[in-house]
Length: 219
Image 1 (tube, rainbow, N blue to C red):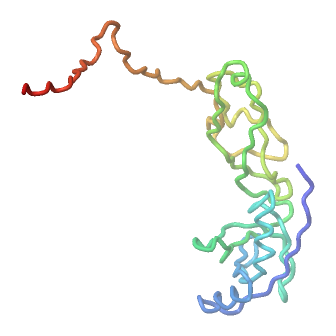
Image 2 (cartoon, rainbow, N blue to C red):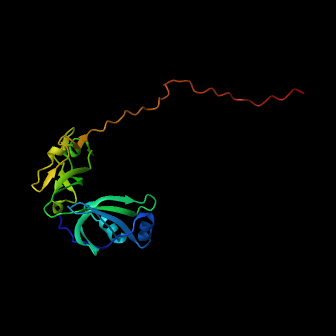
């Protein structure tokens, strides 16, 4: 797992409520936030859209851990819990953040990346199909991987990879049901192609009627 970059976002405490207050914040380039969990009371805050959007664009995305330093409240480690996106502009308009406590495990969903080319594809003419693209895990916040890589190079034709086949990691507990299918190698069956019927041998040629020159009337 790559070393995480330390990110600090400066925020401000929100005292106003309602749509008008949220509209004013967005006009300033800020996003309304609510911070939950970690044994503390919920806090209403706001932070710059540009900085939050940059965090969401990183490889870790919504699983990114960053420090939110709220003026008058203090700094705390957080990560995204829920996000509201404007369906027209595609911009973040509100976010709920999870307050993290060092030493306390959390449950998150991370992407699954298939690694390698199955022997069922290279030697058996099969096709690899990824069924599940995410997996739910429990771990310490600092141990959250950007993604979990799963080696599929040993999969033959008709073989199935289950969640229980993912190698164990002492820092990560897999919560997804063991029987969940992650990937499989199948065979694509081609439908027979019907060829157009050919003309039978000896079939009569189309009758051609030649029109002769009209005889001239006898004088």
